[in-house]
Image (cartoon, rainbow, N blue to C red; front, side, top):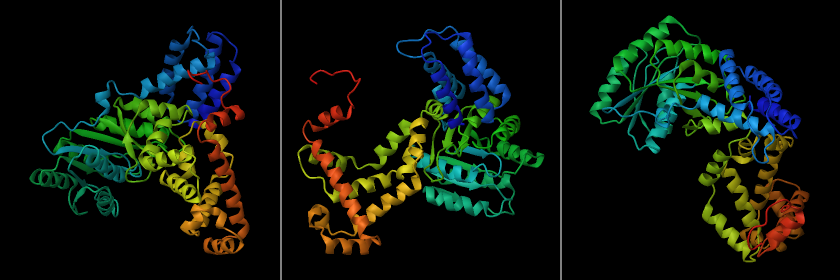
Length: 458
């Protein structure tokens, strides 16, 4: 969805360049593209109709402010409407409600394959680490083979506690026993993972209604696969009719169909999206942010997530030390180069970073073979790791004999060692230009300052 919408928006912005006002004609052109993109992304037809009507009402006759073209102004209108459509009525409605006599019971509902069990463990980890809660999980899924053991395993990975259950027990009895245990052992939150089916049926709905009635949860979360498309809408309606849902958890939002399910499920159920699964890792669950999701949908990327990822994984003290070293005229050596490679690996590698860039930038980067690029980075790391600390600090020492030894240690040809050393010399030359005011001079020579306003003192 993101790529389709982004591509269509880019086209319409180019077509409308030079026009001074948004008119009914150019609005109709753009909305036709938006409508087609949303339908292709499996957004429900009633949702598309209502969305398009609201955008049209907001956009018609709007003056173009400052240097914005009509195309950019319309993208802004669509962006604001996407945010409004996916946002909760108030910020508090989007938060998990744990204001109850402990344990606060959270019931997880959804179809088999949506990711309920993994999401239960992810939520346990989030509650434990971010909210400092003592969390207990229990599986009331007595049908799916190994469902109980799966929850035990992923709960252990999350660092939370798991309550044992058996396939021959009644789901309601399991839930009640878990509540009793949670009360006696002073747990703050109890997460109940329920059974799913491959499709909606009466038995499933009656069972989960019975569990809900028995435990009276403070939160009933509907877990849905963001890549399901139209099926997500039908499932959401069935669960919304059967249970008093309080929130939605969107899983697999890192897939290609980002956005379609979010718009539809939020509209059909009328309850807020509270969390989104952003990766398969146990910490891959985050509070849903409508603005960031809208940016992803429009191909603007998730720069905030990229910044958070960099902040969380980069050793800022080491980065500042390197910056001071370069600025003060200290040499950039191969050990510094190795540390930069390792910092990038800590952030998930090239492909993980590029995925969060705006679509246009990601598309350009994607033209290169990312797999080959990452393989090349790993090869460089292997070559540098085959050097002695003395050689890394003083690459001038690396002559023919040393090159052969390094190549053998890294499992590469001598030519590759030579290529790395040549690339390093070029990088070292750039670093030398950055000391003092060299960076500004270099940017001017490269044309990097062209069009930028002059700042005081420049």
